[in-house]
Structure formats: structure tokens, C-alpha cells
Length: 305
Image 1 (spheres, rainbow, N blue to C red):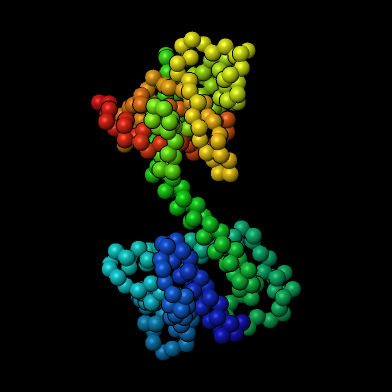
Image 2: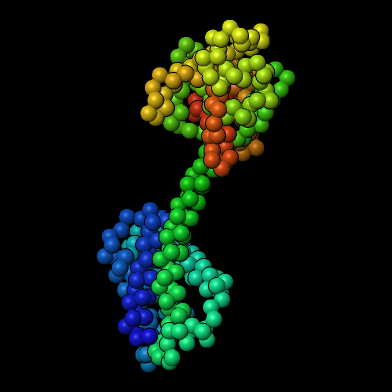
């Protein structure tokens, strides 16, 4: 392959690596700076054709990578710079490792490939390898970006997860909850905050007679449904809204208490209601309840030793 083609490929790949670094770190930078950083990085292709041995050394390669990061994202402070540089290296090694891994996984037959594409190899590199890089790099770049996005979302979500245990009468169930600041559901009469829980997770705590009530609020007024006496004063109906639907009703019950476990600390509260919905709250079962932030505030005032 011609040297100018190899330089263009390296220029584009270096620029894409810098773009991916900026996306992961949510850096606001101008596109021309990213392309300029990619341009400086691509110049290393010409190093073997110069009489200066230092230009092919590891020291110079590290220098070039530092220059690329500074040109693309600027230098504000050391912590900012090292974060940019470390993620750039991580992205580069991840993409390079993925390319090598997929390349050997597919296990190209080079003799056959050479016979099909070229009868004589000239210039730098195996043309089949370069074709693989040209086609495979954008695909891996796309999947790497999505993977980092999902990892970031999962990390944010994990920071908001908390273990809890619901007690009622002589039974209890362990759950994992997501603290959601967007959940502002209150009982309009008692002003108690409402925690949303998947009905499937609570069936062992509930009498069979009242499970239909949580599936359909209208069953609460059905005379054929006999609510056990001990549950009569625990049930209530709370209005709520979901996207695209107004004037919805949810059946809630008052537990004896809910205990939360976070960072080896335990705190509890009984100043809440639990609303049950007949659906999965998390597609991957990461959590099975949505916690009103006010509930945690109340619980931390009753910390358990």
C-alpha cells in the first residue's frame, strides 16, 4: 500500500480515538482541535524514513500521545490532563486489543487471501489486514462507545441502589431499591411518601385474597373480595400519574417497617406506604423497587445500631 494511504488511515483512526475519548469523558472541545491532534499523531508514520533514531523510540511515541491529548482537549490542570491521557490510552489499547482478538479469532487464510486480492504485495502492510482494519475499526468504535455509555449509566445507577427489607406481621422480604429523585408520589391524606415495588416480589407477604386488588384497583370495591380484618386498615388508594396517562390509581399498604442497609449502616422507618405494580421495574432485575428520597431522609433519623 502507498504511504499516503497509510497516513490517511492513521490520521482518521487517531482522530476517532480522540473523539471517543472526548465522548466518554463528556469533554466539550472543537472538532478542528480533535482533527489537529489526530494529525500530529499520524505523523509518527513518517518516523522510520528520517535519520533520527529517537523518532522511532518509545519515548517519542509517548510524547506524541501526550501532544495529541493536549492539542485535542487543552491543558487546564494536572488532574484534568491525566484523566484525558489515561482514558485515551485505555481506548487505544481496548480498540487495538479488540482488533487483534477479532483478527485472530477469524483466523484468515493469508495464502488464499493473497491469491484472491493480490498476486504481489508492495509497500507497507498486508492489504488484507488493512482491509480488515478499515472495515472493522468503525464497527468496534461504535460498539465501544455504546459499551462505555452503558457502563456509565450502570455506574450512575449503582450509586443510587440500596438494599432493604420490608416487614409486615411476622414476615419479611429482602429487596433492592433504586433511589429516584423523580419519584414524588405522596398519599394526599396522610402525606406519607410512597415506595413502588413489583408485585411479583411481594406475593409471599400478601394473603391470596387481596392479590387481585393490586392487579386491578376496581377489585377493592368488589363485594365478592373479602379483605382480611388485619389488612383492612392497612390498605389505601393513592392517585398517581404516568407518562401519557392521567388520573391513575394505585393500591398501597402500610408496612410495619422498612429497614435499609447501606455502607454497613442500618436505618429504618414506618412512615411510608408501599404501592404495588404488576410489572418489572428493571428489565435486567437490577432493582425491584423505586424509593422515594423522602423515605431515606425519614429512615436516617431512626438509625439502627
